[in-house]
Length: 49
Image (cartoon, rainbow, N blue to C red; front, side):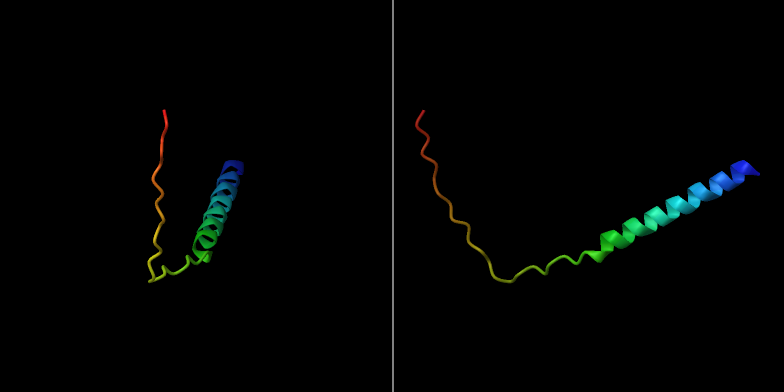
């Protein structure tokens, strides 16, 4: 009877852990992409070897 209870505890804790991780993953709302384009200023490198 003991191995069945250990297996039940392991599966229940694993299931709770997976549910917690999925809720934590989907709780963060990604910011919406902005429509305006940001220009990146490019400065040329002057390598003096």
